Image (cartoon, rainbow, N blue to C red; front, side, top):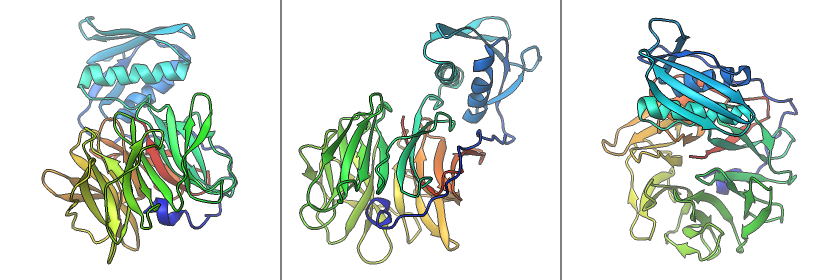
Length: 378
């Protein structure tokens, strides 16, 4: 719903400075004990925070008898050689990482997570979101820990609905720079921007398919806002729905075969599921009368979405196998991380990271006016 309705009004933004570094609160749970040995100073703190944020580790002194594994690294700008050894001194990971020190630490952290737990890490992923720091809704990007904050658009109008390609190299968004709701695409490496969808009417809600070669969008070019699939460049639109209501906020299944979206006609918005090639949509039972902003987890097992609760918005998670829904806290616009365990959402003017398994909450960013509509690369 945000891409069709929330764009109508501009939220006044706070002209505050850059956000403070992320704060991390550790919850008690069963975790692997890991010791940090010799590490370059510029890598150590980033790596430690990445490992804690993953939810899988407890960091202890390297010499501690409780350290099941010990992490160390040598090198620097020319390349970081990261190593992980078990208590017996046997190497379980040895790899060289390039890039700046933060990128090296993030990639090393993700390798540690995958090597020791078998799960994907998210430290080296990218975030995008809307903020009103300038008084206008503009698109910002940041690393997964809130660092490297960059204002991506300076349109001075309304820029909303950011979507990151799975590899984090391209961003699509809905912009009103022309006076109309069109979909733009930005190559993040070069900053090159193009208007890729500009049909008469509303063009909004772009969502990249898992392989990155298609977009699901909401277009009203044929009169009513309907769901379409286009190429990643915005061409060859193929209509999926034909209804009297409004479809919005599409999200893809991990295999790219299906799309879940929010639909409203009479009553509150509900979630529906449809084949990406078309066909008859099926309603999803959530137990709630208001359901928007769905986001499908990369493991395909869950959908996070917004509900109304206590006069405000809350984040809920639907288990697709059991059809059970649970609420995980107040907030809006939830998106899953690559690990299908963590969510990022907006709450109280801040960008929040939630470990949906333990309930651990980390404030990633704040002080940017009203923050909304996060997107997360995978």
